[in-house]
Length: 425
Ligand code: LLP
Image (tube, rainbow, N blue to C red):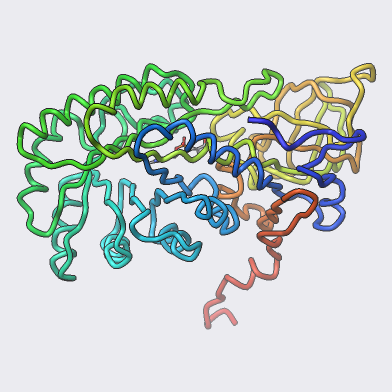
């Protein structure tokens, strides 16, 4: 997929808009998304599966801005949700109940009830107690709840331990050894209808092997379940496909989408099941960047620090997962000028507040703009107001236009959320 973040006349652009223009109007830091890249990523994913009946339920936890959801929904995307809040966001964006699957290891009764009211396509159930509650709540509402069991196939996804979800040490899913039992229970409960089978083994997975092993195990299980008399309609293979965060490598996807799609289709096509896919990162990661301004360049005794106005509260991935994000100067710097090795850091009072360590960067000084690339997924959605730093704006670019799709929060709004008890006033 081609990037829409390119240099024109020495300045980094988002589609047809120069990033310094956006910074001038909106201030920094900010998240900037490219509508074309979003659309292209969605279309490429859908295209890869076009030869089989499939449904894409975008994992909206990756980026749940209404503008992003509406754009994807306008191309026919469904949603994978994990909370009542996400359900509400999806419905507000115009996604229909029958395009929504509900994943999540700890769904509350209230969340289940809301999703039943919305008439969602499927509950991906994680444990026996959830089946019982779902049946009870469906009965109370005079409904039949559609269910799939999320199976834990015990596969090492070979990704960061914090985002591995398909091994027996992880809290997710029903161990594959117990799945038959759970299906038997589900089938015995009159207010449940068994619809499918589901899995999700982790995120930022860059090898085909773990997916192949996991899907094969599920396919074997499908045969067993059918011989037990269950009538399955779909297989949900989750999300997890990784992207390349290292721009220098020039490969947007370390695991080619076509190879992934071909493997999934090869393993599942003979089953006569509909295919559900839950990509998150792959759809939005490349289409976003974090635009930030250098406050100071500081020469320490042992290191140089580029201190920028964004911080770990805006993008936590580097410190939480040791994630690499390419960093680009917004004004192009010729390679002939001196570059240096520096830490690019935020202003928060923790040494873990960094975007890059020991990175080769041009010699940046106060006022220069830099872009932290590939920040469209799990960026804004994981932001916090730590250090009473307001949530930063999100901007969507399309062609030569841009629009703020979430304004900068104010300190007043943050403070106004607190309530001082009567006895203190
Ligand atoms: N389906 C389920 C049930 C999930 O839990 C997830 C992600 C997805 C689909 C989408 O996975 P993706 O295609 O985006 O890999 N905050 C972390 C990533 C957490 C992923 C959680 N689950 C990060 O910044 O790397």
